[in-house]
Length: 170
Image 1 (cartoon, rainbow, N blue to C red):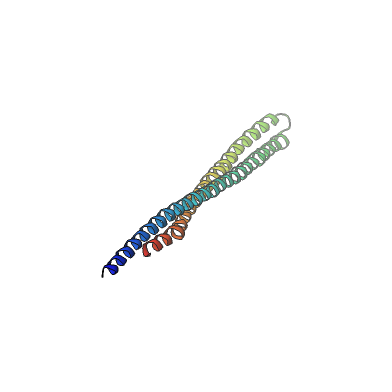
Image 2 (image 1 turned 90 degrees about the vertical axis):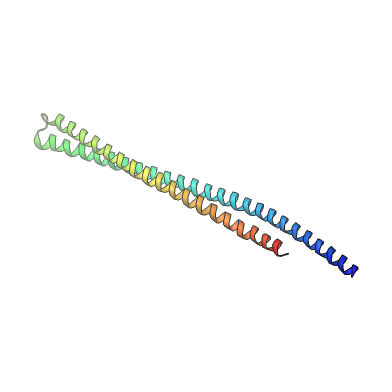
């Protein structure tokens, strides 16, 4: 009886100690590793890749494409076409010497307005909407939220939960 009680108590204490150590080690290590892996890797990779790449690509694409297209289309097409059409109409059709200055001024003003409109529309739409808003929001939201959440969930589920369950079951 005494041997059985001592054996039972020693076995119970060793089991309790093993359970506590396993639970603490599994919980702490699993939680810390899962948190660190999930948070750092998921957040940093998601943030850096999603935000930086998305923002930079969106900014570069939106800025370059929007600005260049807006500038080229607005300035070259608007100014040149407006100036040439007004100059040609004013100089050649109406009169060569009397209306050259009028045609040149009208063409220059029409070209300037077309350039400003094309540049502003191309810059605002292309850079702000396309590059900044879409690139930044998509990159930030997708990269940060998805990367962080997936990294955190994967780190928590893969590392912390099995160790916690193993430590708790043992």
